[in-house]
Amino acid sequence: MIAEGLAVLIHYTTYLTPGVLLFGLWFALTPKAMPAMRILILLAAFVLMRDVMTPLGLWTLGSGVQIGFTANAFVLAVLGGLSVLLILLLAYIAPDLWRLVRWTIGSPHVGLAVGLLVGCLIGAPLRLYQGIEASAFYGYWVWLPAMVVLAYGANALEEVLFRGFLQGYLEQQLTPLRAALTSGVAFAACHAFLALSVTQLGWPVLVFTLIEGVACGLVRMRYGVLAATVTHGTAILLVAVPYIA
Image 1 (tube, one colour):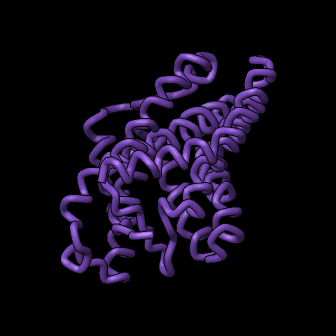
Image 2: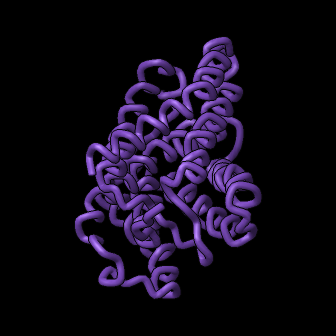
């Protein structure tokens, strides 16, 4: 599993490198006095990193917004861990944007509880509707811990970008509520290419991501990025299943 996973990760990295280098150069050439542009560059780079996983077989979207992730637990754990490392890298290379991130607002414990509850409210109905049963998937319980790492690690990166950088920046220009709604709509819009071109699943993906994005934006507004990460990660974890390419 590890040897196969390493081959998959090397292929993903080499396939992605030219695009990431171009985004990195664009980011480096953009002055710090243009924070909105720097945030948009990071969002676009993230969309590339996420969407290219589909043609490479790392994940797939099915009807009813059922999300299949590679059955290789090693790959999932590494991708989740690398996402956390990218968060630390962003803190180092973009301290000006990092200051926009509000990890917690109010009580952290209440925020985590609310984040978990909202995530369940988003994901559980879809899981029930799809009839997802763990026993139906071979190796599900071995796969699940690695999926937890990916669900919360990768979505922590996504939440730092959308709810930390983007929503934090928007709150300097707009009311907190409008900033939250805007970050949610932007989140859904950034799934348009995935929904309409990569997977061709269309409006169900956009509706799901709009609901998820607005919910995460509102949770971030009240409780911070950490709570929004729990919301996002929990929702994805509940609709995720092992996928064999």
